[in-house]
Each structure stands twice: as C-alpha cells, then as structure tokens.
Length: 173
Figure (cartoon, rainbow, N blue to C red):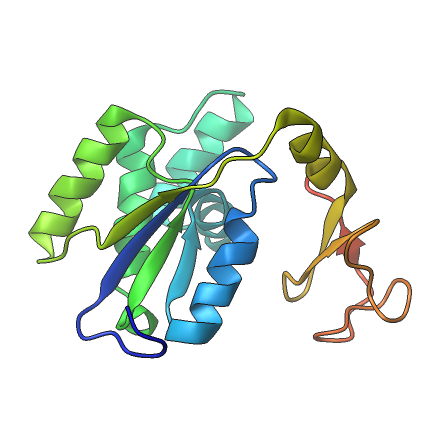
C-alpha cells in the first residue's frame, strides 16, 4: 500500500500477545490510511453496554466467567462492519485467535465480498511484554494510551488528547 491510498476496503489483521504493540500500530494505520481499528474485546464491551441482542448474550456468558462463543463474537463483528465509517477498511486487533475463528472470519468476509489484505504477527520477548503491560493505562473518555515510563501525559492525570481526568488501567492487565 502506498501512503494514504486504498482502492478497496482493506482488512488488516494484527496478531500478537498483550503488549506487543497491536493497538499502537493500529492507531498509526488508522491515521495514515483512514482505517478503523476493531478490537473484539472493545466491541464486546460496547455491545454489552449498548444492550444489543449479541451484547446481552455476551454479558450473560462473561458474567458466568466463561469465554464468549465465536458465534457471538462474529455477530458483534458483523454488526460493526456494517457501519458506514468502515468504508476504507478495518484493522482487526488480535482476532482471529483460533483456526475456527479464522474460518468463520473468512466466511463472513466472503459473504460481504471482502478478503484479508494482510496479516502481521507482532512478536515481543516476555520481559518486554510484562514491562509494557504492567505500565500501560488509558483515558476512559477517549481511549488515548499512556505508560508509566514510556509515554506520560504532559500534565499528570490529564489526557493530552481530550483533557479527560479519568485515567484507568485495564482489568485484564
């Protein structure tokens, strides 16, 4: 791809462990090419909060401490891919994770006349991954990311992007 030019909707997949930089790379791709980052975890949380049928199904599973089924994840992904803002393409952040999810994604993309443009596996050694994950936090309002050592906000406790003051750490970190 050349900078700023995409002729058909792109479907990029970023794979890697937590702290590998998937979110960081996705944000740069969003800015450069106008793509939309889709994190299945974020999509699940948003669907639960919005009370969609798939979100309600996911909520029950998540509250029981179980993993959300591929069918529910794919339903939520399909709903999001139908939104008009994904016209230039999407970046799938950490999805698919299994052969079953890959096959289901392929079927979904075929159904809507798309295919995977590229998949990138980001690798990081264990020590760096732990350091990255243990220090990261985000703005609750806009999602801007920070880190205790690598990227502090200009004013402590205040988001550089939106001015929000509710900075939080992910529960799964």
